[in-house]
Length: 368
Image (tube, rainbow, N blue to C red; front, side):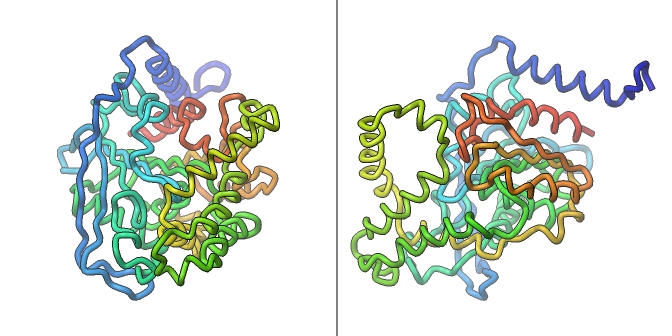
């Protein structure tokens, strides 16, 4: 023990964190948006869904930065997988607000040091999804199916047998807990962002069901065999989505008058529904129906840095669930980010400028 009761290990941890943050804030070239990721597709043959359905081929699209490194035993030592949220995709992590904060030279996940893997989940992005042709006849996948497919992508497609770090945002946050339970020795550290490790119930479940019901209840939906997108249903779903995922503080600052608020809403409702396929959206929200990692949280071995934001309406802090459940994780820590000018409600999960200090701490704590 050092003077003051601080262990040498703790001092080393503090020093590592301070050094990492110093590197992040030091003057350096920004992550170049011209540094395009490598794209790839892995095809899983005869993929079995938990529903009992089988597809001859399931395509898993992915992006990567950097190259894998292995130790003397052949274990990959530098792989980082980042999982996106519902209706999102890997491309969302390639922009300046994410890649530009984490993947650049000297940054916490420097692509010259780490092998960064960004998969499109089943039903999302350019991976196999209902809108590819099967529409409402597509298997009703769930999060277990998505995690199993991600594992296949790593183990068989990319030959990655270990993760240095797993980060998950929103849906990816929930899947991070599932990964840590299902494959407890596969990773050194996990950072779930913006979720709760319990069954989706209460207002969260109601939100999802309202969105699904709005689309399915639109006569133009035609049991999923629509000729044209059911725009009325999509618009109603987007009404709910906008309120639940936005930040009241930022909305008030950005649209402080009635005219500005109305103009934004009109523009949003004209553009946003056009970006979705109705079946893809229904399937994506339905996939959370049986999510519930609560019973197996004590089985998690990896270091977990669990982070939520106080202005997240989907995972509101007043529930007290995160603080209660993280106690079951042996090496788990929960951080509630206070509301600031930098937080953006549920979307704070994709703004590492707000939470990167906790990533630095996690990397230091889980270093071998």
